[in-house]
Structures are given as C-alpha cells and as structure tokens.
Image (cartoon, rainbow, N blue to C red; front, side):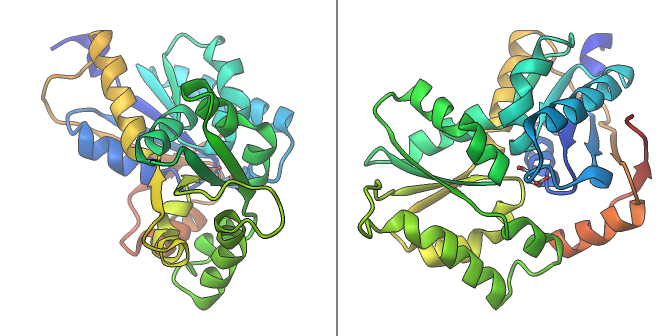
Length: 274
Ligand code: DGL
C-alpha cells in the first residue's frame, strides 16, 4: 500500500449531472476511492457570469484540498471552461477538466473535420471548446449552440418527453443545415454539458444516422488514468470507498438524481463551501 495513492479522487460538478462522469470514472478505475461534490445550492452555473463561477470553483477546490484528494476532476463543463486555468495553478492537486478530453473525443469521431458543440450559455460564451478543438486541429470547423432549455428539462425528469425532443430539435437542426447562413454542416455532435448524455436518445434521433454523438466521460476517465499512472498515484487494489456530498438540500439532490438516473439515490451528505 502506498499512502499518497490511497487518497481519493475528487469529482466536482455544479449539481447532479457530474454523476455521469463519476460513473465512467468508477467503471474505468474500480480500485480508486472517490469523493463527489455537487454545488446544488448554487446550480445552475450555465447562466452565470464567469467571475462568479471562478469563485465557486475555487471554493470547491479548497474543499477538496481539505479532503486530501490526490487529483480533482472538474466534471462541470461550465466550470472547466471558465475556471480550470485559474484554479489549476492555485492548488497542489493535479486538476483535470472535461473540455480537452471532450474535444479529443470529438476529433477522433469526425471524418469531415466539422464538429458541433452543444453546451450551456457560459460554456459557449467562453469559447473554450473552440479553442480546445483548434489546439488539437487548427483546421477543424466548429459550430456552437447554447441550449438553455435542456438542463431544466433533464432536472425535471423530462429527458424522454416530447418537450425535450422539441427543444433538441430547436438546437440541433440549425447545426445540420446551411440554411442561408454560412455554417459548417457537422458530422459530429459533442455533448458539452454534464446533462446532455441523458438526452442522447433524443439528440441521436434528431441528428440522424450520419452524425456521431460523443461526450467527454470516457476520455476524461482515460486522462485521469494516464495522470495517475505517470505520477505513480494509481491505487493498486483494496476496497474503494465512495462518498457523495452536496450543498443545499440533500433531498433535492436525491430527487433530481432519481429523476435523472431512474435508480435509487445514493447516500448523500450535506456540506458547505463558503
Ligand atoms: N454542470 C453544468 C455543465 O456541465 C450544467 C449544469 C449547470 O448549468 O450548472 O455545464
């Protein structure tokens, strides 16, 4: 046993949606202990100002430092897009966001080098996905679409409703047609928000068979695996422990978790950040 490697991985999200990333982490790294923190009391981050989200993310990073996490995953796309670069230099634990892994997943999928990004208003405003995609392929065509109706629909347990399909149509169809405006016709859609994997069926239906739909969960877990391995922080066996914390009401967190994942909510504890 190695003390440093036995410490948990911290996973941060603005609320419940980051559990999609946690799930994939636990699947790929079954020996690792995890601590999940959802800032449910201040969710959603998507419509906020960048400075506010940087402040919240900094508070979360302090919380993870107190919990002695060996690595922190910012599973929230919005927080990654505006805060990762700032907080990464302020805390000792290696910190991984979801934007670059998501961009890498999209570039592995696109044959015509044309990617559509679906994300929150702030993620789109930040341009973080465009930068990450162009860092990896300077010639890639990128079209972004902010989708403010989707997070509330998922949180209300309406991911499979006709209203969700209508909203998806409203956001996705403009990315698939030229329609008078000069836009790349994308062959890959990148789900740039924690909640959108829960709408994958509707998005795939609207996008059609010729468009690939990718998210960042798998590649983010892969990035975590690589950082742990290269810094000798991989935990080798033993019983992994998992803890879930949220700010605000535990009951609300559990209700939303149940609505989103259709399964019994896990044991969640309340905490404070500020
Ligand atoms: N977690 C956010 C994201 O991935 C979505 C929810 C929110 O707006 O806080 O962008």
